Image (cartoon, rainbow, N blue to C red):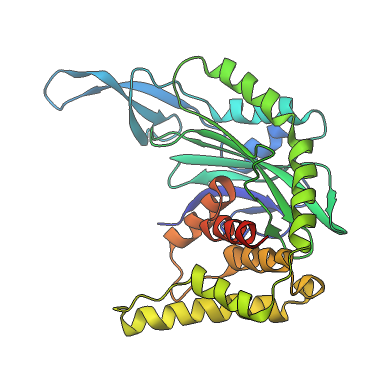
Length: 310
C-alpha cells in the first residue's frame, strides 16, 4: 500500500511523497483541494452489528465519495473537514497563500497541506518557511500545525525544537474545534519570532568548535553499537555512521560550516531528510513525513549534544 493515496506538488517532489500531480505553480485553496484529491467530506455514521443493534457511544467516520470507513471514534469526536483545513490556512497566512503540496495519506486516514511563507535568511542562506497542517480522520491523531523551515540550497528541513519559540500546535478532536483553531491562529502569528530565534540558534551553533575527536564521539553517541549486536546490525550501524560522516566531511553546502556545531546540525538534517538505510519501505517514507511535523529524533539528539558541549 502506497503511503500517498492522492496528492499534488509544486516543483521538486518532497522525499516522503513519491507520487502525485505536478502543477506549474502554487494554487489557491480552491484549486489545491481539487488537485490534491481532497474534495470530499467525512460523514459521521452510526455503527450497527450485523443482524443486531447499534453500538452506543461510537461512530464511524466514512468518506463521502466511496463510503470507505476511515476510523471508529467516540461521540465526543469533532470532525474537521478538509475544506476547513484549507480555509484555516487561508485565514492564517492571508491573501496570496501558496500551497506547495497537499494530499491524502494511508487511504484517507490522514491529510496534509504545506503552505509556503515569505523567504528568510539563516546565516546568509535562503530559507523558505513553510506551515504544515496535518489532520487525521481515523481517530488516532490530532489536528497539528507546525513551522517547517526548508534550506533552499538542498531542500533539508531545519525544524528544530527551540526553547525560546514555539514550533508546533496541536489539539484533539474534542470540544469546540473552531475556538481551538482560532487559538492556533493567534499562536502561529508568532511565526516570525520562531524564525528570528532559529537564526539566533544557528549563529550560536556556528560558534561551537567541533574538533575531530568530538565529532567521532558524536557519531558513536548517535549510533551506539550494542555488545550483542548481530552482524547485520553492526553493518547497518557502520553504514549509518559512514553516511553521516561523509555528509559532514564532503557535502558542498556544509563545507563553510565544517568544524562547527552548525555544520554538524546541517549534516544531521541532511541525513534525516535523505538517508534511506538498508531497506526503503512505505513505513520509512511515512516516518520521514512525520519527522517534518513531530520532529526528528536524530536532530533533537544533535541539539542536546551541542547544548552539552557549549
